[in-house]
Amino acid sequence: MSNHLTLELKTPEGDIANYIQAIWYATAHSHGEQWLACDGATGVIFPLAGALLLDDKALSPPYAFQETSTHAAKITFSENAQFCGIRFNPTVLAEFKQHNHPLICEQSLMAIAKGLQKSANLQAFEALISTHFNYRHSIGHTYAKQLISKLIELTPLQTAYQLAPLSKRQLERQIKSQCGVTPKYFERIYRVKMAKQTIKDNPTMSFADIAQQCGFTDQPHFIKEFKAIMHITPARYRKLLNNTHTKKTKLIMR
View 1 (cartoon, one colour):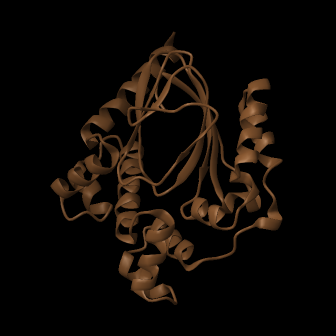
View 2 (cartoon, helix red, strand yellow):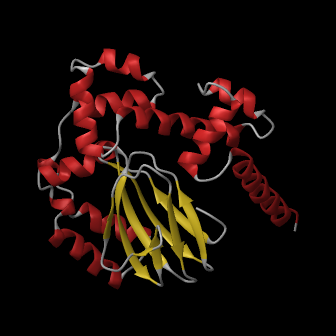
View 3 (cartoon, one colour):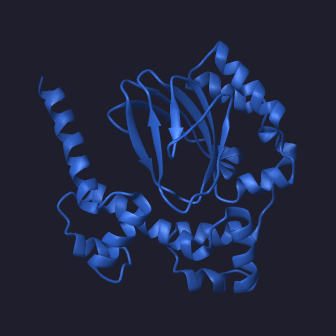
């Protein structure tokens, strides 16, 4: 996340990857804050130690749901804070709630929080989650998932609509009800995510070229969209990446 944090991240494999995007555990070395880009996903956060705020609202134990947001969320933490979470793929949390999936019922989440009081680390967290993930309650294929998967692959929205057997209006209603945002917004999110990765992979590439490569109308449109989604300008993001790289280089030279 930042120089203030140590973040351990586990990307699930197999069937669970259809539902869970990531399992993570964070430990703060000092007071700080970080902007979390909205990507259409949702999650559950478990505050374990210290103070933790999301968009300036305190998150209290044992857990808190992180719903889909139309803007980047600011997470603020105190020194020595510890917190962990589950990041679901888009549409999954709404489907889990609809089908009363055992992973997100209050009893299961309380059991996970209680288990973390005894042993707080990524491995223990993953084990606690697995005991509550019942594949007999798995969620099937939906056309909303199909459309979002196409948008994640940066398929143009109109093309993605044409590849789905439902009408545009039906898909819009389905995604809006399950995710809280429109397909058009998903398209914006993933275009910005592509631009973010392009900046990271190409430190000297001009923003005009990045805008063209990632499907923005022009450079001003790219900068406006990037800032709206990420709450940081492309130039500032590149500077932060360069500063991080410089610090790592100095440590290696020592």
